[in-house]
Length: 173
Image 1 (tube, rainbow, N blue to C red):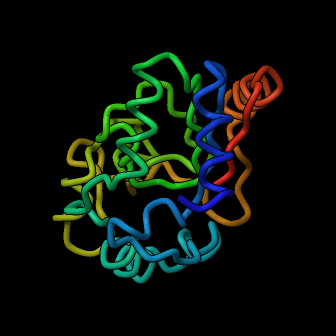
Image 2 (image 1 turned 135 degrees about the vertical axis):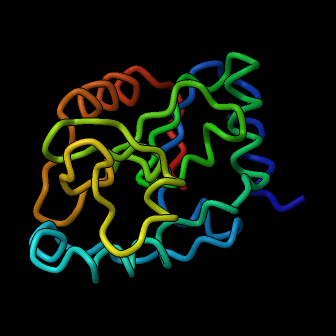
């Protein structure tokens, strides 16, 4: 075993207070390529084009967790990993069994009507024609993902800072 991997294993074996902070690289093994999410302006002005891209490139609903996702869930179940902080929007950490997942950029699995606030699942958005509309009020549905020009959720940021500041080990992947 490579010396660096041995050292990492020693660090992980010796802690019960690690936090994992990950991004697109964690999900590439599950077949989700890192993509640039378009801006809020593009979403508002060209929502059909946004959703054509979003449904095709961002909503990989058939993706499955990979070994990294499962290992993090295992560490959480063992009491080693206190939180997974992710920039990914795919929900794969939760699918693998992680419970305390802080999604900095939201999730494709949560979608809301911008007019009345009704919740819609990912399948509703994925299977809609063009830009999805609310089946109750006709308002535009927005994925609960952070687009360029939008701010991050303050509550998620606060929790992230808390977990990272309390961690004995921080793994950035």
